[in-house]
Amino acid sequence: MSNLTNALALALDDSSRSVVWDGRWYTAGDLRKHITTLRAELASAGVRAGQRVMGAVPNSYAFVVSYLACLEHGAIFVPANSEMPAGELERALARYQAHCAILAPEAAGRWSDSLQAHGFSRTRSVDMDAAGGQAVQLWQTSDAAPYHVAADAPDERPAVLMFTSGTTGEPKGVLLRHGHLWAAVQNVIESHRLTPSDVAYCILPLFHINGQVIVLLSTLVSGGRIVMRDKFHASLFWDDIRDHGVTWVSCVPTILSIVAKRPAPKEALGTLRFLRSASAPLTPAVAARIEAAFGVPVIEAYGMTEAAGQICTNPIPPGVRKPGSVGKPVGVALVIVDEHRQPLPPYELGEIAIRGAGVIDHYEGREPEPDYGYGPGWIYTGDLGYMDEDGYVYITGRAKEMINRAGEKLSPREIEDVLNAHEAVARSAVVGLPDPLYGERVVAWVVPEEPEGIDADALRAELASFCAEHLAKPKWPAQIVIARSLPVNATGKVQKHVLRNLEPRDRLA
Image (tube, rainbow, N blue to C red; front, side, top):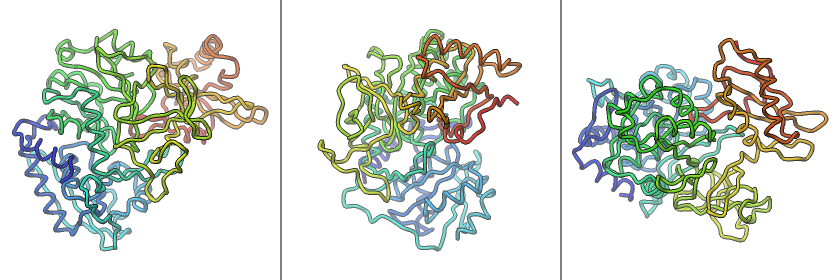
């Protein structure tokens, strides 16, 4: 057993409640029983250690069982969005190369033609809880599927294969080993001071790394309990926190923007220790609004799939939190490097590079980066930022998203922060579009707080004046597009490659 599976086995020996789903608490004993059942079914389906198993199950007790069963079985869990259309599944299956699939019945029904075209056939159903409707289907293929030979060291065995979000390019494979997950879990438990008395609220998609490691694994290993929803429901958020004594929530900025506008019952605020924000930039004004209204600290953090979740986080009170910063590295070595991959001093802007026990050293199917003179094993994140003299990290954007206006490099994040500070703006995204004179021009997409009945021309003029007050002239948006929403992925990251391919016109219909 790896350190991770050993810790999970010890956690499941505890008879206290572990997971609540759809109003029902499932105990550690329930989890152990259903994990054992599903592992037996995987064995019957011929799944060996090191083989890939696609898991397409929405947030539910069934996902928890499926995920933990694969980790214990030694299979490589490949999480998939159970709501993706069949056309996207076609492309995903080519990347996944899975021998078996654990599917929610709804997903299996929608995908059956595509699955059969790729050689999959349904073999069995596994009923985890008839009363709660928690069932999954197992599909398998007769095709020879790749698998990793089990490493001698249990912590070196592959555990989860994920793919980067692809917001700026083709998704890359990230193979996380048991040791990566274990190191990441320890970092989260330490930095967030998780204990058996904590109750986490799981509303982020579990097919992404944040939900899997930050919420699910870290809570189970620390002995805490999990309250789970299929997704974020604004009308249920505060009631769930009050009814179940939730102590912390992992969020994305979009959720926090909505939460900031809704009243919270005093009973809910009595147990809540903090709200955690990651996966996308958090506007400091939103955090300040929540803390002023509810008295609950907002902890901004930074992570990525390649690091099995968390890289940096602001400290829990009474530690110092710095607005606009994602905090300090935790259990991860981090340097800011120039274009030659050489380290930079504090306050110098460059690319963020990371290395650590929870960080992969190369992408699946690719060679590791060369040693640039300060050791091997570094991942260059593509994120731009700087570090202050206290070791706090500030992210300014993605290297591929920087706007080159007449040779001057402009940060979209800086312009977005100004736009988001305007009281009429709920969210914004800034991209560079081709310009015959300057090479690229700044185009801002803005979602108003109240889209209904908005005077787009008046708001555009107001925002142009606002930018003129707070930004140097080269950073002023050449065009401001008023839209009802922005294209985002499941974790709330704006898909800027989609915006670059859209005609920049108002979209309020």
